[in-house]
Image 1: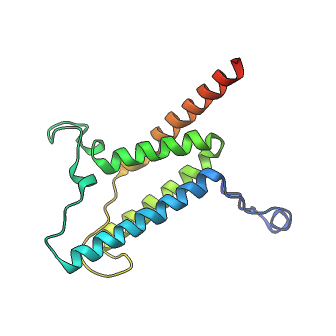
Image 2: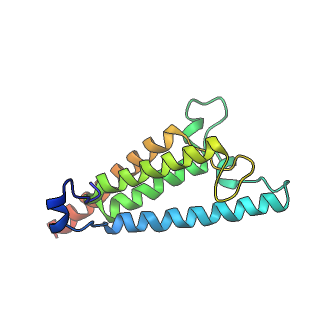
Length: 154
């Protein structure tokens, strides 16, 4: 879990630990937030600037049942969490908890239309993001185990 003690006695003896994968994930979250602020400011300055290449890209046609998980943002969830799973396969719970917290924040901001400034809708949340995060992490962790096993044989 996040390493948060469950009672006062444990709190005196333990420290909150953050895995290297969670640190990488937090850095990515900051980068995404900065990108979002940049895009939001750009749209406020010029309302015609609504182009989001990650949102508009899709591997599947509009009629495909996989369309919801084929856009650039969904694929970035899958690939980003595959990297996290590969880098830090032992921190699955911590990384997926942080992912769920991010998605909850993203959902609230998409529903309220609020994010560091008021205005139009900006963030959007999809339930499939949680699945893509989980699947990506599992793929990356499996790859890390395969590499470790291969290296152990040599």
